[in-house]
Image 1: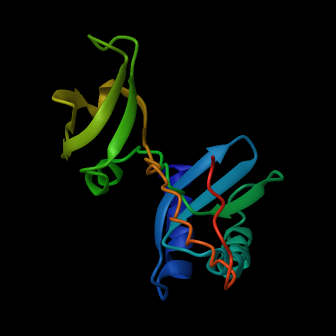
Image 2: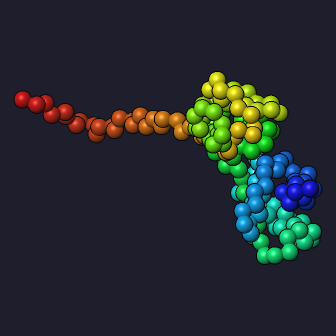
Image 3: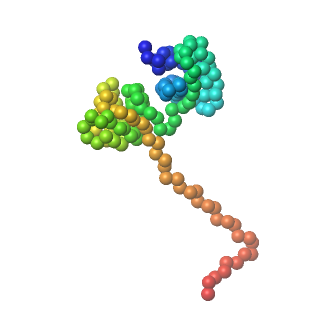
Length: 162
């Protein structure tokens, strides 16, 4: 069992009675990042000490480590088949491995995903050909709300150009 799988087993009981789900676990040096889907800032503040306690009780990592409990965010890293499946229909950016034939960068709508790979912008890639992938949040063109006309004081006249 890998360290991330072990951490997932320790976090599962903490999330069991909540409406949240474990999205991913990232290990970066001495940092353990636990990403929880569907959690507000208040939820993360409440869950963080519970997750910390579960990891401390297990004494999983003997050296000093840092815990980050966070949301996966709007632009989510896609690593596992279930991440890709959940993102079908979303705009994604994929970088392929150096040995993959064709362009290394593939941007477009994630059309399909299964246990073997994905199809993006008409191109099918096996998971082994993907170096990294993420969803792309598309900011809509914001339209300024129409300003209401300022009322003119009673008896005010409009000046005409001569």
